[in-house]
Length: 517
Image (tube, rainbow, N blue to C red; front, side, top):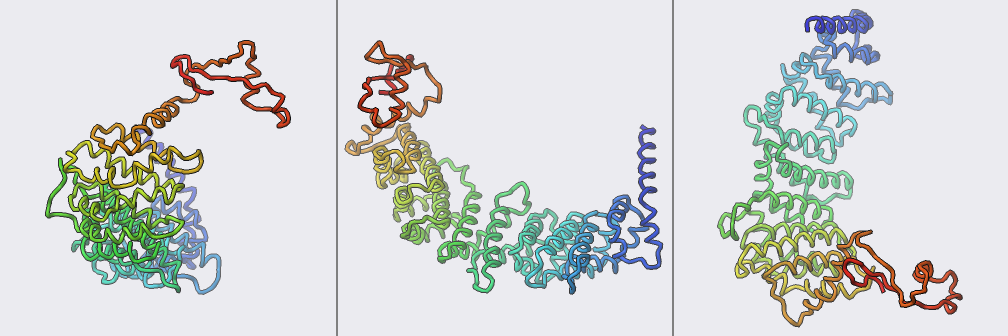
């Protein structure tokens, strides 16, 4: 082992000797500048990685101030080195993560002030925003306690960060800050709450005519970060605090108000956040429908606004839109919660009827069909767990909507006429398997099951090549080639009258039933 260790040491020493001459010459030069080192960037990076002590000593606080200037300020002249090469190299200097250099940032606040001063510019250069965020993340990784303590002491840092939420790089940095485990000193939680408040505000603001593109990106990024923060429990240490702040007053009123305010982009983005919050509500420990005064505020507000959601679902138009699609998803997510207030409200408003009828209104929207299928099947299967007297939403779904009629009528449509036939068959199969089904005798369900559904299932269950088939004909002298010619049809339409018609059948040997006639 000692020999191996000595060998590695010798290799590293040789490596250092091989690359240190140029950099040492530059460091000993009377004209030494940061720019001169950056002109020899490859050698400089090798020496930084090799912990060249003379090079590390060069990066004093004034030199790092120059590094920050390249990273955060656009050059006054159009020069390749100043505008492209040097900012990139300065960013890479920090990304080398030399501890001795990074520690200088925390000896005094001047360097951090210069770094975060980048946020005071509006709008910001997107390339420089990427450099700024990467530097901050390196510092956060190196000493999260000190950096978060600094951020806590900055009065407007939360607003400055979220004002640039149109930048994906800035939003990724906000995600890192909000999900950080170390809260610093004093506690960083208050700043965390401020950031969530500003993100919610940006989420529900209608895009302005002057900055439409930037405002639109703010809406999308705000929605994405709130969803990510509340969904990724393993990555986000503070997710429960973030959800509490986002789903509490007044933020949840703002978010649900954003769904209803009329802007399609805001509505779709806000609905996605509500869905994410709903999925985190835990009622799985309950064995029966929860009747509790401790109902989440988000559930109460959704129930209050159900009539407004109903109006949006019934909005005329040939296009469904992401706003309505997300509202459908949100309402079914609510229906999965064990709260009596939800069941009562949905029944009183009749929202299930409107949800089911969307299938007919938009017969080719497969995304809508998938969401409706998932929600309806969940409610149907869940009905087996409860007494029907308690689980009244099942009766509403079967008896007071057009679900059964839509399924039966779909079987009467021609192939290619509708796009939800597969949807109807899946739900029909679930209904037939539920032992508590109670349908009217005159609705035609029994005939549908016997005459259509069973045959359809039989065909669907036979995979390609399954079973052994033979060809039979009433004429024993017919050749098999003539059988296939008859199936393919004549080569020329004029030959049709000259062809003799034969009666063929394809039979399954195992099942002895005719598969083709």
